[in-house]
Image: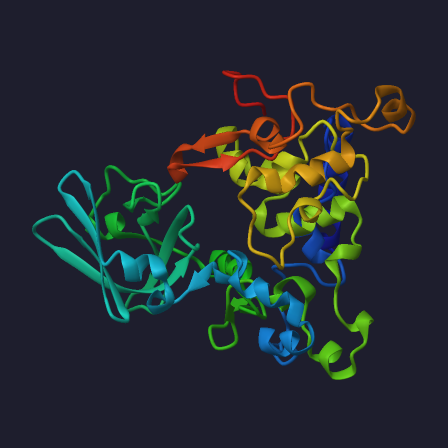
Length: 376
Protein backbone atom coordinates (compact mmCIF):
# COMPACT_ATOMS: atom_id res chain seq x y z
CA UNK A 1 0.00 0.00 0.00
CA UNK A 2 1.42 3.39 -0.95
CA UNK A 3 2.08 6.12 1.65
CA UNK A 4 -0.75 8.23 0.26
CA UNK A 5 -3.21 5.36 0.71
CA UNK A 6 -1.93 4.65 4.22
CA UNK A 7 -2.24 8.32 5.13
CA UNK A 8 -5.76 8.47 3.79
CA UNK A 9 -6.74 5.28 5.64
CA UNK A 10 -5.39 6.66 8.92
CA UNK A 11 -7.27 9.92 8.30
CA UNK A 12 -10.50 8.05 7.69
CA UNK A 13 -10.02 5.94 10.83
CA UNK A 14 -9.45 9.09 12.88
CA UNK A 15 -12.56 10.68 11.40
CA UNK A 16 -14.55 7.52 12.05
CA UNK A 17 -13.47 7.38 15.70
CA UNK A 18 -14.21 11.07 16.09
CA UNK A 19 -17.60 10.49 14.55
CA UNK A 20 -18.36 7.89 17.23
CA UNK A 21 -17.88 10.60 19.85
CA UNK A 22 -19.62 13.38 17.92
CA UNK A 23 -23.37 13.57 18.57
CA UNK A 24 -24.22 14.82 15.10
CA UNK A 25 -21.77 13.45 12.51
CA UNK A 26 -21.59 13.93 8.78
CA UNK A 27 -20.00 11.46 6.39
CA UNK A 28 -16.75 12.79 5.00
CA UNK A 29 -14.77 15.93 4.45
CA UNK A 30 -14.81 17.26 0.89
CA UNK A 31 -11.17 16.28 0.42
CA UNK A 32 -12.14 12.64 1.06
CA UNK A 33 -15.14 12.75 -1.27
CA UNK A 34 -12.88 14.09 -4.02
CA UNK A 35 -10.57 11.09 -3.72
CA UNK A 36 -13.44 8.65 -4.23
CA UNK A 37 -14.39 7.58 -7.80
CA UNK A 38 -17.20 9.34 -9.59
CA UNK A 39 -18.25 12.96 -9.90
CA UNK A 40 -18.16 15.39 -6.97
CA UNK A 41 -18.42 19.19 -7.08
CA UNK A 42 -15.14 21.19 -7.14
CA UNK A 43 -13.21 18.26 -8.61
CA UNK A 44 -10.58 18.96 -11.24
CA UNK A 45 -11.41 17.80 -14.77
CA UNK A 46 -8.91 16.00 -16.98
CA UNK A 47 -10.20 17.94 -19.96
CA UNK A 48 -12.84 20.51 -20.83
CA UNK A 49 -13.78 18.60 -23.99
CA UNK A 50 -16.89 17.08 -22.42
CA UNK A 51 -18.25 20.41 -21.12
CA UNK A 52 -21.13 21.63 -23.29
CA UNK A 53 -22.27 24.75 -21.40
CA UNK A 54 -25.68 25.74 -20.03
CA UNK A 55 -27.15 26.74 -23.41
CA UNK A 56 -26.95 23.13 -24.63
CA UNK A 57 -28.48 21.84 -21.40
CA UNK A 58 -31.36 24.30 -21.60
CA UNK A 59 -32.22 23.25 -25.16
CA UNK A 60 -33.92 20.24 -23.58
CA UNK A 61 -34.36 21.29 -19.95
CA UNK A 62 -36.03 24.63 -20.61
CA UNK A 63 -37.90 24.64 -17.31
CA UNK A 64 -34.50 25.00 -15.66
CA UNK A 65 -33.91 28.40 -17.31
CA UNK A 66 -34.49 30.26 -14.00
CA UNK A 67 -31.26 28.67 -12.74
CA UNK A 68 -29.33 31.24 -14.76
CA UNK A 69 -30.74 34.00 -12.52
CA UNK A 70 -29.87 32.31 -9.22
CA UNK A 71 -27.14 33.70 -6.95
CA UNK A 72 -25.08 30.57 -7.65
CA UNK A 73 -25.12 31.19 -11.39
CA UNK A 74 -24.07 34.80 -10.90
CA UNK A 75 -21.48 34.49 -8.16
CA UNK A 76 -18.47 35.11 -10.38
CA UNK A 77 -18.19 37.79 -13.02
CA UNK A 78 -15.91 40.17 -14.79
CA UNK A 79 -16.21 43.78 -13.53
CA UNK A 80 -18.09 45.04 -16.64
CA UNK A 81 -20.86 42.53 -15.85
CA UNK A 82 -20.93 43.28 -12.13
CA UNK A 83 -23.88 45.43 -11.07
CA UNK A 84 -22.20 46.28 -7.77
CA UNK A 85 -19.26 48.01 -9.43
CA UNK A 86 -21.30 49.47 -12.25
CA UNK A 87 -23.74 51.08 -9.80
CA UNK A 88 -21.10 52.14 -7.25
CA UNK A 89 -18.42 53.80 -9.32
CA UNK A 90 -16.50 55.42 -6.46
CA UNK A 91 -15.85 53.29 -3.37
CA UNK A 92 -13.34 54.08 -0.65
CA UNK A 93 -12.10 53.02 2.78
CA UNK A 94 -9.51 54.49 5.14
CA UNK A 95 -7.17 52.61 7.47
CA UNK A 96 -5.25 55.37 9.21
CA UNK A 97 -3.37 57.25 6.51
CA UNK A 98 -3.89 54.50 3.95
CA UNK A 99 -6.68 55.16 1.47
CA UNK A 100 -8.30 52.30 -0.43
CA UNK A 101 -10.36 53.14 -3.51
CA UNK A 102 -12.18 51.37 -6.33
CA UNK A 103 -13.20 53.57 -9.24
CA UNK A 104 -15.28 52.18 -12.09
CA UNK A 105 -15.64 53.78 -15.49
CA UNK A 106 -17.12 51.74 -18.30
CA UNK A 107 -15.41 48.37 -18.52
CA UNK A 108 -12.60 49.27 -16.13
CA UNK A 109 -12.65 48.97 -12.35
CA UNK A 110 -9.40 50.38 -10.98
CA UNK A 111 -8.25 49.47 -7.49
CA UNK A 112 -5.77 51.84 -5.84
CA UNK A 113 -4.08 52.11 -2.46
CA UNK A 114 -2.14 55.16 -1.34
CA UNK A 115 -0.44 56.35 1.84
CA UNK A 116 -0.18 59.91 0.57
CA UNK A 117 3.37 59.38 -0.65
CA UNK A 118 3.11 56.32 -2.88
CA UNK A 119 0.19 54.93 -4.85
CA UNK A 120 -0.28 51.38 -6.12
CA UNK A 121 -2.81 50.69 -8.86
CA UNK A 122 -4.33 47.55 -10.38
CA UNK A 123 -7.19 46.67 -12.73
CA UNK A 124 -9.69 44.29 -11.15
CA UNK A 125 -10.24 41.12 -13.19
CA UNK A 126 -12.73 39.03 -11.19
CA UNK A 127 -15.55 39.70 -8.75
CA UNK A 128 -16.73 36.88 -6.45
CA UNK A 129 -20.21 37.14 -4.95
CA UNK A 130 -23.41 38.72 -6.21
CA UNK A 131 -23.36 41.59 -3.75
CA UNK A 132 -26.40 40.32 -1.87
CA UNK A 133 -24.11 40.34 1.18
CA UNK A 134 -20.74 41.21 -0.25
CA UNK A 135 -18.37 40.98 -3.18
CA UNK A 136 -14.60 40.36 -3.21
CA UNK A 137 -12.05 40.99 -5.95
CA UNK A 138 -9.01 39.47 -7.65
CA UNK A 139 -6.41 41.09 -9.87
CA UNK A 140 -3.03 40.32 -11.39
CA UNK A 141 0.33 42.03 -11.09
CA UNK A 142 3.22 42.19 -13.53
CA UNK A 143 4.37 38.77 -12.35
CA UNK A 144 1.17 37.28 -13.82
CA UNK A 145 0.00 35.89 -10.50
CA UNK A 146 -3.36 36.53 -8.88
CA UNK A 147 -3.83 38.64 -5.76
CA UNK A 148 -6.83 39.25 -3.54
CA UNK A 149 -7.77 42.84 -2.73
CA UNK A 150 -7.67 43.67 0.96
CA UNK A 151 -11.11 45.26 0.68
CA UNK A 152 -14.54 43.85 -0.13
CA UNK A 153 -17.81 45.55 -0.97
CA UNK A 154 -20.51 45.02 1.69
CA UNK A 155 -24.14 45.71 0.84
CA UNK A 156 -25.01 46.72 4.41
CA UNK A 157 -22.28 49.39 4.32
CA UNK A 158 -22.83 50.44 0.70
CA UNK A 159 -19.07 50.67 0.59
CA UNK A 160 -15.81 48.71 0.90
CA UNK A 161 -14.19 47.46 4.11
CA UNK A 162 -11.74 44.73 5.08
CA UNK A 163 -12.12 41.50 3.13
CA UNK A 164 -13.33 38.83 5.62
CA UNK A 165 -10.43 37.33 7.58
CA UNK A 166 -8.01 39.63 5.74
CA UNK A 167 -7.96 42.70 8.01
CA UNK A 168 -4.48 44.18 8.32
CA UNK A 169 -4.54 47.30 10.53
CA UNK A 170 -0.71 47.54 10.67
CA UNK A 171 0.80 46.49 7.33
CA UNK A 172 4.56 46.32 6.92
CA UNK A 173 4.43 48.28 3.68
CA UNK A 174 2.02 49.52 1.02
CA UNK A 175 2.35 46.31 -0.98
CA UNK A 176 1.16 44.22 1.96
CA UNK A 177 -1.58 46.77 2.64
CA UNK A 178 -2.87 46.40 -0.91
CA UNK A 179 -3.32 42.66 -1.29
CA UNK A 180 -2.73 39.07 -0.36
CA UNK A 181 -1.11 36.65 -2.82
CA UNK A 182 -3.32 33.71 -3.82
CA UNK A 183 -1.41 30.49 -4.46
CA UNK A 184 -2.29 28.14 -7.30
CA UNK A 185 -4.01 25.52 -5.10
CA UNK A 186 -6.12 28.13 -3.31
CA UNK A 187 -6.92 29.80 -6.62
CA UNK A 188 -8.16 26.46 -7.98
CA UNK A 189 -10.40 25.97 -4.93
CA UNK A 190 -11.88 29.45 -5.31
CA UNK A 191 -12.70 29.05 -8.98
CA UNK A 192 -13.91 25.48 -8.47
CA UNK A 193 -16.72 26.86 -6.30
CA UNK A 194 -17.40 30.08 -8.16
CA UNK A 195 -17.23 28.89 -11.77
CA UNK A 196 -17.96 25.85 -13.93
CA UNK A 197 -15.13 23.87 -15.56
CA UNK A 198 -12.61 26.35 -14.25
CA UNK A 199 -10.11 23.79 -12.98
CA UNK A 200 -8.46 21.50 -15.52
CA UNK A 201 -5.65 19.20 -14.39
CA UNK A 202 -5.73 20.80 -10.91
CA UNK A 203 -4.99 24.23 -12.36
CA UNK A 204 -7.11 27.25 -13.17
CA UNK A 205 -7.95 27.46 -16.87
CA UNK A 206 -9.50 30.80 -17.72
CA UNK A 207 -9.99 29.77 -21.33
CA UNK A 208 -12.46 27.02 -20.47
CA UNK A 209 -14.28 28.28 -17.41
CA UNK A 210 -17.91 29.38 -17.39
CA UNK A 211 -18.51 32.19 -14.88
CA UNK A 212 -20.81 31.14 -12.05
CA UNK A 213 -22.23 27.77 -11.04
CA UNK A 214 -24.17 26.42 -14.01
CA UNK A 215 -25.60 22.96 -14.80
CA UNK A 216 -22.39 20.99 -15.17
CA UNK A 217 -20.91 22.28 -11.91
CA UNK A 218 -23.39 20.02 -10.08
CA UNK A 219 -24.28 17.42 -12.72
CA UNK A 220 -20.83 16.84 -14.20
CA UNK A 221 -19.72 17.08 -17.87
CA UNK A 222 -22.72 16.81 -20.17
CA UNK A 223 -21.33 15.88 -23.60
CA UNK A 224 -22.16 12.14 -23.39
CA UNK A 225 -25.60 12.82 -21.98
CA UNK A 226 -26.49 15.47 -24.56
CA UNK A 227 -25.22 13.33 -27.42
CA UNK A 228 -26.98 10.10 -26.45
CA UNK A 229 -29.78 11.32 -24.15
CA UNK A 230 -28.87 8.56 -21.73
CA UNK A 231 -29.85 9.49 -18.15
CA UNK A 232 -27.03 7.41 -16.69
CA UNK A 233 -24.45 9.50 -18.56
CA UNK A 234 -25.09 12.49 -16.27
CA UNK A 235 -24.86 12.78 -12.50
CA UNK A 236 -28.09 13.36 -10.60
CA UNK A 237 -27.44 14.72 -7.07
CA UNK A 238 -31.12 14.19 -6.18
CA UNK A 239 -30.41 10.46 -5.92
CA UNK A 240 -27.80 10.84 -3.19
CA UNK A 241 -28.45 9.57 0.31
CA UNK A 242 -29.37 12.41 2.71
CA UNK A 243 -25.94 12.56 4.37
CA UNK A 244 -24.14 12.63 1.02
CA UNK A 245 -26.65 15.14 -0.32
CA UNK A 246 -25.78 17.66 2.38
CA UNK A 247 -22.06 16.97 1.98
CA UNK A 248 -22.52 17.53 -1.77
CA UNK A 249 -23.73 21.10 -1.18
CA UNK A 250 -21.14 21.39 1.58
CA UNK A 251 -18.36 21.00 -0.97
CA UNK A 252 -18.71 24.74 -1.47
CA UNK A 253 -20.94 25.84 1.40
CA UNK A 254 -19.07 24.03 4.17
CA UNK A 255 -19.81 20.46 5.27
CA UNK A 256 -19.62 19.32 8.89
CA UNK A 257 -16.08 17.97 8.65
CA UNK A 258 -14.84 20.82 6.46
CA UNK A 259 -15.75 23.31 9.19
CA UNK A 260 -14.52 21.13 12.07
CA UNK A 261 -11.16 20.44 10.42
CA UNK A 262 -10.77 24.14 9.56
CA UNK A 263 -11.25 25.03 13.23
CA UNK A 264 -13.92 27.64 12.54
CA UNK A 265 -15.86 28.66 15.65
CA UNK A 266 -18.56 31.08 16.75
CA UNK A 267 -20.99 33.07 14.58
CA UNK A 268 -18.70 32.68 11.56
CA UNK A 269 -19.97 29.11 11.25
CA UNK A 270 -23.41 30.48 10.31
CA UNK A 271 -21.93 31.08 6.87
CA UNK A 272 -21.61 27.30 6.47
CA UNK A 273 -25.23 26.26 6.24
CA UNK A 274 -24.65 22.50 5.74
CA UNK A 275 -22.49 22.39 8.86
CA UNK A 276 -25.11 24.18 10.94
CA UNK A 277 -27.89 21.98 9.54
CA UNK A 278 -25.93 18.91 10.60
CA UNK A 279 -25.74 20.18 14.20
CA UNK A 280 -29.54 20.30 14.42
CA UNK A 281 -31.26 17.92 16.83
CA UNK A 282 -33.12 16.14 14.00
CA UNK A 283 -30.03 15.55 11.87
CA UNK A 284 -28.70 12.08 11.27
CA UNK A 285 -31.93 10.15 10.84
CA UNK A 286 -31.65 9.71 7.08
CA UNK A 287 -34.72 11.79 6.30
CA UNK A 288 -34.57 13.15 2.74
CA UNK A 289 -36.70 16.11 3.83
CA UNK A 290 -33.89 17.23 6.13
CA UNK A 291 -31.40 18.19 3.42
CA UNK A 292 -30.44 21.38 1.60
CA UNK A 293 -32.60 20.53 -1.41
CA UNK A 294 -35.46 19.60 0.91
CA UNK A 295 -35.94 23.35 1.37
CA UNK A 296 -34.08 24.96 -1.54
CA UNK A 297 -34.48 24.27 -5.25
CA UNK A 298 -31.04 25.04 -6.75
CA UNK A 299 -32.69 25.68 -10.11
CA UNK A 300 -34.81 28.54 -8.75
CA UNK A 301 -33.90 31.95 -7.27
CA UNK A 302 -33.48 31.89 -3.50
CA UNK A 303 -36.70 32.39 -1.53
CA UNK A 304 -36.25 35.02 1.20
CA UNK A 305 -39.85 35.19 2.44
CA UNK A 306 -40.09 33.20 5.73
CA UNK A 307 -43.58 31.98 4.84
CA UNK A 308 -42.21 30.26 1.73
CA UNK A 309 -40.78 27.51 3.96
CA UNK A 310 -43.84 26.84 6.12
CA UNK A 311 -44.96 23.96 3.92
CA UNK A 312 -41.58 22.29 4.31
CA UNK A 313 -41.66 22.64 8.09
CA UNK A 314 -45.19 21.23 8.24
CA UNK A 315 -44.23 18.26 6.08
CA UNK A 316 -42.41 17.00 9.18
CA UNK A 317 -44.23 18.68 12.06
CA UNK A 318 -47.90 18.30 12.84
CA UNK A 319 -49.99 21.45 12.58
CA UNK A 320 -52.45 22.46 15.26
CA UNK A 321 -55.20 20.93 13.14
CA UNK A 322 -53.71 17.48 13.68
CA UNK A 323 -55.00 15.73 16.77
CA UNK A 324 -52.05 14.97 19.06
CA UNK A 325 -52.74 11.23 19.56
CA UNK A 326 -52.96 10.76 15.79
CA UNK A 327 -49.70 12.62 15.31
CA UNK A 328 -47.98 10.54 17.97
CA UNK A 329 -49.21 7.30 16.41
CA UNK A 330 -47.74 8.36 13.08
CA UNK A 331 -44.46 9.44 14.74
CA UNK A 332 -45.01 13.02 13.60
CA UNK A 333 -43.07 15.66 15.57
CA UNK A 334 -45.40 17.87 17.62
CA UNK A 335 -46.72 21.17 16.39
CA UNK A 336 -45.30 24.46 17.59
CA UNK A 337 -47.40 25.84 20.48
CA UNK A 338 -46.68 29.41 19.40
CA UNK A 339 -47.77 29.41 15.76
CA UNK A 340 -47.73 27.60 12.44
CA UNK A 341 -46.51 30.27 10.07
CA UNK A 342 -43.15 31.95 9.48
CA UNK A 343 -41.57 29.01 11.32
CA UNK A 344 -38.01 29.82 10.27
CA UNK A 345 -38.18 33.33 11.74
CA UNK A 346 -38.13 31.73 15.22
CA UNK A 347 -36.51 28.35 14.73
CA UNK A 348 -33.77 29.50 12.36
CA UNK A 349 -32.89 32.93 13.80
CA UNK A 350 -30.69 35.46 12.09
CA UNK A 351 -27.11 35.64 13.34
CA UNK A 352 -24.89 38.67 12.92
CA UNK A 353 -21.52 37.70 11.43
CA UNK A 354 -19.10 40.56 12.19
CA UNK A 355 -16.63 40.01 9.36
CA UNK A 356 -19.52 40.01 6.86
CA UNK A 357 -21.24 43.08 8.36
CA UNK A 358 -24.56 41.29 7.99
CA UNK A 359 -27.02 38.74 9.26
CA UNK A 360 -27.09 35.10 8.19
CA UNK A 361 -29.90 32.61 8.73
CA UNK A 362 -28.67 30.05 11.24
CA UNK A 363 -29.45 26.62 9.82
CA UNK A 364 -29.16 24.93 13.21
CA UNK A 365 -32.89 24.27 13.52
CA UNK A 366 -33.90 24.44 17.16
CA UNK A 367 -36.07 26.06 19.81
CA UNK A 368 -34.19 29.34 20.09
CA UNK A 369 -34.36 31.44 23.24
CA UNK A 370 -33.85 35.22 23.24
CA UNK A 371 -30.44 36.25 24.50
CA UNK A 372 -28.99 32.74 24.51
CA UNK A 373 -25.31 32.28 23.61
CA UNK A 374 -24.56 31.19 20.07
CA UNK A 375 -24.93 27.39 20.21
CA UNK A 376 -21.87 25.49 19.03
